[in-house]
Length: 332
Image (cartoon, rainbow, N blue to C red; front, top):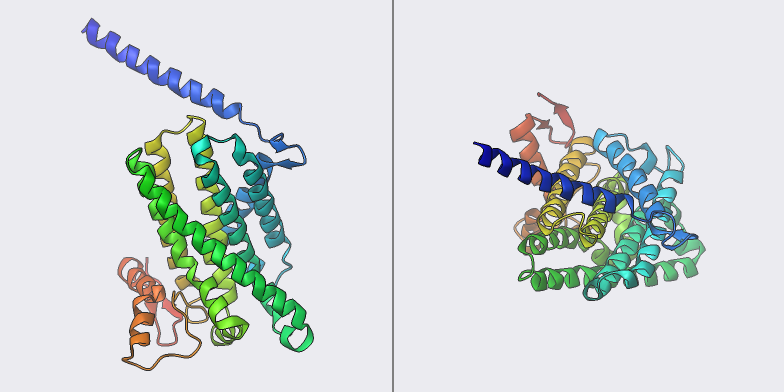
């Protein structure tokens, strides 16, 4: 019995020492001075994540006023976008202090974060309202925006593909991290389809979609680009903790995959619950409804996450949708 007790005591002591060591490492993280006092990566990260979590909580609860150009000013979105962009810039500058083999990866992460911020602004109702008059008033602004659309969509898509390559190379080193990166990049690949369609079909396509679905710009930002940017920021913070040996590879990989899945499922269901029919979650989103039975119609239906969300809500929460798409009763 004494031997068993001593064994348990030794094991508990080692666990306590490991926890204490991780706590010390966490407390030693520099929040205000790196890479410089004028561009503190940690501080901007805190502002970004806290503001983002606040916005996500509003989205999940159905309070969409901060995303509406007719109901509120864009101040909170501007604060979130600026803090996230500054966090990305500081992270890019800080990447040279990471492990040599991960420096390129962290730079790609910073670029991807900046791309997501661009689409938080680009698809917002505030920006969309201003852009309606550009073809008639300011051709130059439209051309600059189109150039930026092309640049950021290509950058976003290439960064996501490179993450899949990272997931493949990580498989031999850590299967947990490899799976976590792969799950995250696949989720990001879905949201990259909208920017690609914007580049291919142009501003007219986006104007048409907003006329067809009056809350589409609100849904895109509130339930897609803000939550995905917050999720990505949390994963990057987890990567920092992993590099500092505060998180194990299993904790980092499993945590990343869990955050992505919770974000994806939670936001998809919330959007369909709060703004059905006046927004859509079709991944392939043509302006005009394709002919029934056509290949395009089959593709639209297969990639219609609104349909899947309604099936889940009906099965789990007994949510019923009328023909017009509005929730008519909720039984919990």
